[in-house]
Length: 480
Image (cartoon, rainbow, N blue to C red; front, side, top):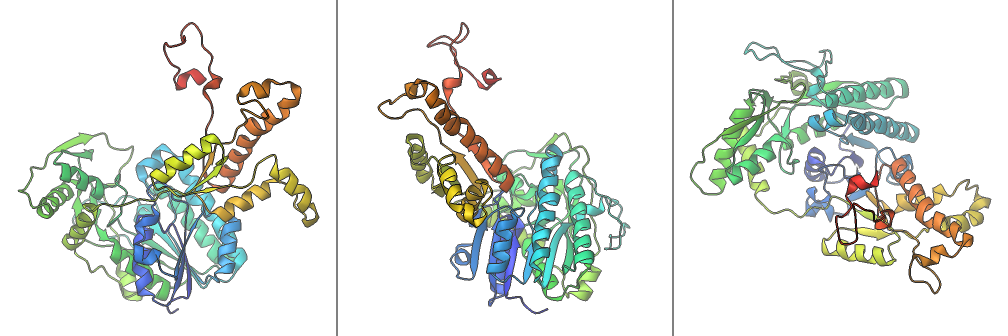
């Protein structure tokens, strides 16, 4: 396969995905790109460089990959022929804390995405990005044999387990339904725009502040250090030359342990800040439940079949990362749909978001009011439930967060909640606007994978002997 024409990239606002977008936009100059990302965790629209964001060949769509309506619309309207799949919850520590959420993001959402791709049926190449962590631990000896693609998978943490499950489904959909999937297991990657909970950016921040480096356990864990542009070039070659149904390791034999990395980072930061060498000191913190000591993989197959091997030295790559980290960055990590945006609270929220340069859109649907009226008009078109009206609007808005500012506190000549105390005829409005609407929005947001926030009221508290007027205030525990 030569360079594709229309590419869908999932998770293209994350660390590896965004660097790949920046790389591939120039490597494939005649190609159009659609980037689908729900801006989870450290994802940032502005990790994609300004030149690419302003290109007519690039489009960002903010959505969860489990949203089949949006995925199907993009696949068909953009005539997608190639998919590069990055989207994943990829932090091992976080996956220990939230294993079910990691399963939702990395497996269940992925299967729903594959279903949409299967129904579309026009993909010529699908590159699935996995991890070397599916192999599990490698021995620490100098005679340790690197693991080839034929090695069995023994994932040693919840993240790696979800990626192994994802690989199983990739294999299933390739074998059973003919989706042309090529799979990549990639080494530990470092580069610009990495989340600051990761080792290199966290160490850069510590080094800049000349603080002590915290290390999990002994700090003797060995990691291979593959620069992100080398990884991006390997992904490009896999899309162009990789065989369908095959798996390729992308990695490097260059290794440093965590303690050695701290020394290198401190030296490079001091150098770029033009200051004398700083003393490197460590603080040991408890290790996670199981921390693989080493991931050593064999890249012979990629070198032979793809013509790929890493080219950027660790020293050159680290210099680039430090230089990027020391520059200011304006982030865009969300886009918000506001329901009730024209009310008093909604207008205050708009001003706040404007002051912080956070993009937002005002939803037009009024749940319980417009939805019922629209439903009656649309019954002839077989619209069976009003949820579709709200879902269609949210899919059209393409946001990552839903903020519910709706609420009924007044009406008619009453400017206070006395309006709702006017008798049984007001009960319908009260329940519709203050209970039904927020619950429906919460349900739909969960369904679409959108972050949902609801602005409630302090009226749910009542003064008592412990909380008197002007005395001790209520805290979160008082809500239980």
